[in-house]
Image (cartoon, rainbow, N blue to C red):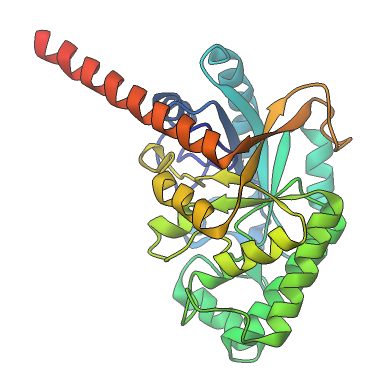
Length: 323
């Protein structure tokens, strides 16, 4: 597949697998042309996940780990420059209003080429980690999925307004642990209003929504965001890109066949991708520009990539037999 703008590795993310270099090598093997490295930003001690607590990690450990990630990403970007265009970035996590200052300082400290704007917490509880945490956040919101969704999209609006992320991560990830994750959101007027408001903001500053295939491997019927949200964003003139949100080599470009079918079914005629170039619409990333690829071209590129991948795999098997 030509590109993905969202990825993680087990080397720098506790709930992922494989080294960062192995993930890059997998992207090369899948014939990716552009692949963004976007490990999670460090979090405070009070926001550690259970496996991080069990591993006796602290916020200081996460900061050191992230620093290691940044320089490893730069090394890999240079090492594999002739085989793939690697973009070095970060996935930020808006947890509370004070997140703004921390994230702003992080973006100043490192010379990123992009960042993914995401919300994984509501009422400071992770909402996509497991059902228990989700249930606590729901109870704190008033006891219903509807109220939790409203709180989620309000928090997302804060993040969008203050940070204006170039790419918005898994826009409706709040669906993952809900009672009806594939249900329509249009029957909740308050939720739908907030969704429309947020999409207006993203379209207004020129942000991009990722079509995130991770939802499909997690058992959901549609990627993030679901079709009705994509249709609304299209009406507002919004742009989309593709992401696998991979957490290891076995998830690189996972379900991209289904993702392209979704793109066609939704009526999305073109998607964009980031690349290194002089022209830019975001002064924060002066060497990054966007290019457009039509759905038809995308399908042809994907078909060629799959054919090359199959051919390479056959050649590797033949070499193994000869040996």
